[in-house]
Image (tube, rainbow, N blue to C red):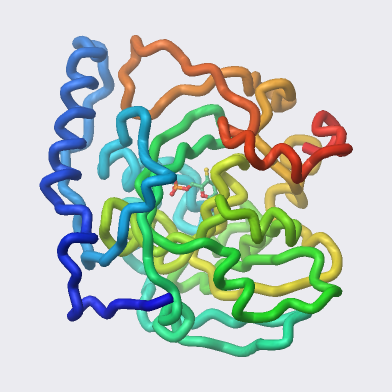
Length: 316
Ligand code: MTE
């Protein structure tokens, strides 16, 4: 694997910005066709901003439906460290300093230590993958992430046979993350995966979106993306990765175990105690757009064998 520095571009492999622009245009045209005067006022359409990343598109993960726009992805967020409204993170996440950044890797692994983000990323070639994203609140998006498979990173750290789970921890710093001054969640935000889930080829560590470094509100500079699970598993602004023997206590499961489980697999057959999970609202599709049927594992049924023998109505 090679990591190309930004001063060594390989133009043919970069998604030209014009393609994004064209795709956004397609999305907007579709939106214009599907929304009428009642559509919510849209945020001024913006072009992707931020540091350009060099990433090769992975043809195994491309869109068969319109992508959400840069504005959808970067202005409708859940990041409680910056407030509980969807619009709060885009407004408030400017206080986060994603550089310099370091990540500590610990626990049941032969290789451990604290690494600068640059050192952590160095061995990994970045790729672009379009994934569907399904929030537990029954809205969804289609997002072109830039990053690399989590399995590649895990392999480098040589977890021992005791490592049954991987825990991911977000930065805790109430100065940079003012939402942590309130006890709305138990900080820092922690998420986890079973080891076989973590090394599944779909599990992804993202450093960018739309060919640009992650905006702060999307979890700069490093976040998890597990597309067959509800959005809350996708922990943002990661500073620790720990290989552990027992399932870690994860933030939402601890806050309300009846409503949010450790597995959090997208499952239309199991309603949330307060709402149905059978359908979802695609962000940006307009008020008259029909809701979309939610699919088991968010359509990524190749993961089903990870759960054979597990009653998924109990193990939510
Ligand atoms: N990570 C942290 N640290 N804090 C959060 O509040 N929210 C989660 C997840 N990761 C959250 C987090 C939830 S509920 C969702 S739906 C996704 O981030 C939203 O990601 P997005 O804002 O990039 O769409």
